[in-house]
Image (cartoon, rainbow, N blue to C red; front, side, top):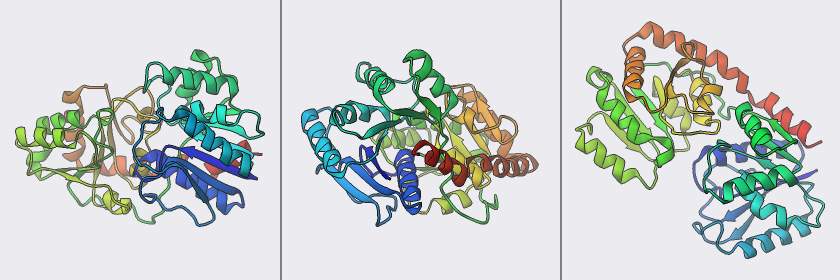
Length: 354
């Protein structure tokens, strides 16, 4: 069985890229012939790709607009599919459908659309709904990360071929965080979606910073200078640290005691699953999809009304100031993270590819 994946690129440290690498590597270990086709080459893959996995690059440049050179991309992908004849091509995000569906026309390759974003959010007001509608009409299957997104495809796009497969936890470690460090952790691209501007405002209102706690933001992005300016303006340089992405994510979780997420919207954020697996209580905004599918409110942490920075700060202080509550939510997080174990979720992919 030959299964290929189509993704924008592999050189960034995002959850989508990590999950693609994880599923591709896992299928390869099961004996599948796996290939990953990247629209853009960039630098080397941030996450390890097994040697048996074939890599293809449609464009040499790391940053080109997905819609510029559209005919070129469709033609190049068609040539790869025609030569390699994969049984399945998995589109990593529905945007890829705009390229994969015409490229696979008249070929035997079946398209699986793997939607990683909130299906109610449009990255483009025209192409987003168009891509999802085309996927609903012509893809062999659509895979969503949450039941909410599955319902959106079925009700809004009249899709008949949708199933939900969760993201699995990808890290392997024997010991969770000892909860010794007074560190609140947040990981992600420093972009509008992730809401780090709100997280800085939350930290300014929180009492935690006066009790020896530090906020650590791990990521880079186009808004980093704005965030750094906001930190300086609010006089928070001594209690907020920004670090670049690292391969050693286990060390990040082990050296933290609480995880904070202030995203404006999400798919199914892998960092929350990993943080719970490592025993970190969660404080997160309850955006439409994602956190509510992972975090058990008042059991593994707190879900806060979106954009309510005052309540978020209060919940953060409640956990940081109450050691017993911190430890209770830590134990619960480890327990509930088992719902995202790799093997049963990989089996769902194996069943899909039969």
